[in-house]
Length: 356
Image 1 (cartoon, rainbow, N blue to C red):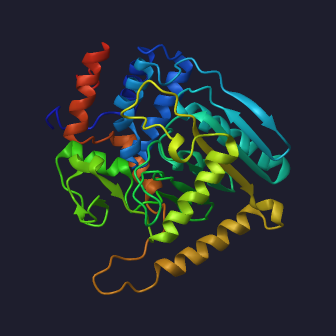
Image 2: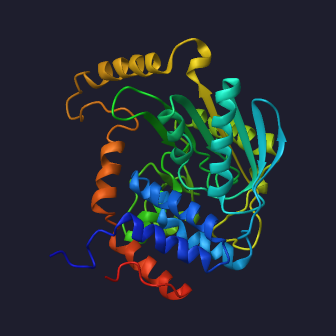
């Protein structure tokens, strides 16, 4: 029998624990369950750096007044194909899931739905807000202004940009939809925080110090810069995302961005957007699009790999089967995260989720 300290935790048990922990900070039961479900779904689909790993950060902001536990999500402005949601400084998952659902509703009616978010907060991986579109036969897209500035403008030295992630999805007749979820930096800050929690080093090329030399100690991440993907191209993409997710929505961008981990008392006014595009609006049926995408993907996977390379994979490949396995067998959390969640349980006065 596996040691209980190493045994997988059932998805439902972890979800219930997260919901109870959020409820200790006055988050209403329905909202706590919604956020807990999405947080655990992040781990189920393999986005561990943006799942329950973030619980400590969320609880700290709720505790210290930086995040509103009883937010009332509202639609500030709306047209047939667009809308702007005000997140009321609540947990980011609430505003983003509302934006996703409204965008999909508008896409069914108008062919496209684009919904921005202002006064939001960190909302986990963007994949949570684009995969449902692909499952419904639509193309999905989402982006966000990063929740802290870790990147200078290309050639500069002032921290004015975040990781500014981007995600896009598309249906496929294969087992997995196409789901690309990426930061505009070489590595997401969440990955670096996980390495710091585990006491592991970063590869060279993720960060540099203010002297321009490679920085590999994640514990010293505040002493350096994250590097954009593709140099000036990644910088330009990050700025474009800031305009669409931040400026367009009346949300924070540039020096207005609040570091949501170190500052747990200030409103972040995080900006995001979600888009849904109905492929049927272009005269091609959903099934036909999915079949055509699957054919092209199969051609790509069949491409002979270069020496020393693994076989070709598409973004999203294997996620469906891996998620099903985790739902059936439970989640294997790394020891450092398990320990942190046990400490959190004691701190907020809820049962230890790993006690059998």
